[in-house]
Structure formats: C-alpha cells, structure tokens
Image 1 (cartoon, rainbow over the protein chains, first blue to last red):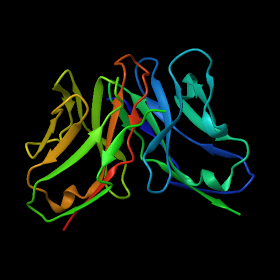
Image 2 (cartoon, one colour; image 1 turned 135 degrees about the vertical axis):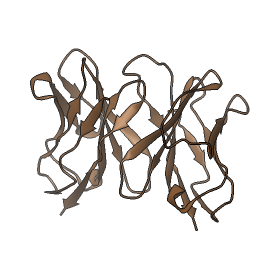
Image 3 (cartoon, rainbow over the protein chains, first blue to last red; image 1 turned 60 degrees about the horizontal axis):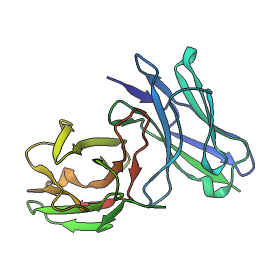
Image 4 (cartoon, rainbow over the protein chains, first blue to last red; image 1 turned 180 degrees about the vertical axis):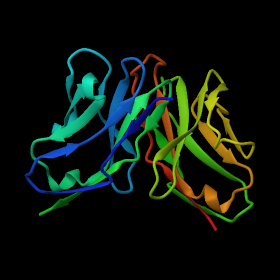
Length: 110
Length: 115
C-alpha cells in the first residue's frame, strides 16, 4: 500500500527563520503528493500538490515543496516563518483516496 | 471560494446512541469522503462515495457506520450505536474528479465526543 512518513513529530522554529518539514513516500509509480495544513480548530487546507512536471512546486502562504524521486521525498519549505504558520502539517499521497502521514506540529516562538 | 460545510461543529452523545454527522460538499463535486482523526493520531480514511454508492471503505468502517446522500446536496455519516472509541474529529471531503492529483477539499470537521 502507498504510504507517507513524516519523521518529525514536532518542530519549533523562531519567527523569521526558515522551516523545512520532511516527508518520505512509498509508492511504485510517480505519486500524487500533497501537503495540507490544519490550524487549531480548523479543517485541512491544501497548501500545494505535485503530480508531474517541475519538481519544485509553489503553494499558498509562501510555501514550496520539492519532489526528489531519488530520495523518495517531498519536503515542504518556507524561507521565513510567521507566527500564523503555527499549525499541524500533513503530507499525503493520493491512491484514489488520500493517505496521510502522522503529521508534524510546528510551534513558532517569538 | 466554495467550501465544504459540516454541521454540527461539536456533538456530544452518550455511548450506545445513534449519531448523524452532516456535510454539504461543494456543489459540482462528484466524489465524497469521510475521514476521522482521533486526538493525537493521524487522519484516517473511512469511506469514499460516488454515484450513490460506496466506492471503497476502510476496515474501520464496520456495520455500525453508514453513509447516505439523501438529496442533491447533503452527505451524511451515521454511527448506529456509538462507542467511546468513536470519539474523534470527523472530516468530510469532496472532489470534482477522480483524476489522479485532483485535490480533496475538506470541511472544518465535527468533533464527536462519546461519553
């Protein structure tokens, strides 16, 4: 079965610092990959997706992700974090249904 | 931008009671889903629904669960006899197409508490 792994359960970052969240996938073919964000008390909002073409994809809120087939990774990055980026972030792979990773909680300190 | 809406936002029920969680997917979407997230755990797939029938269901989705699209707009999840372990956040989602990479749009969820 297709799956994604998010190795980091919790990351703390200072406001203005860069952020990178790791995601590794297990999939036989070219995967359809997504990053979602869940702010406290909110639903899941799509940040960005990858399914072909340019391996660096841009998303909303200043996020980007890079697909690396050789490393089976789809890491999410943001150059400068804002306090409002504190949330839980989920990587997901689409196999006719989304399968989510366990999530990474991001805390932003002032 | 159109949204998936879920009601209620929070439901408290007693063990053994039936509960119905309601969702209004985005109006032109054709594929509908329920996911759940037990506190502190990952988001888990429950069921997908298309053309008025279940497309796929997980092992979580046992005989206590059912889904229905009673009219052209609502999509409901029923739990017949709730258990303590059903306490979770339940997310409804929809998408326009079954094409690979077509993104799922999620509602804000219903937090179900079974006491």
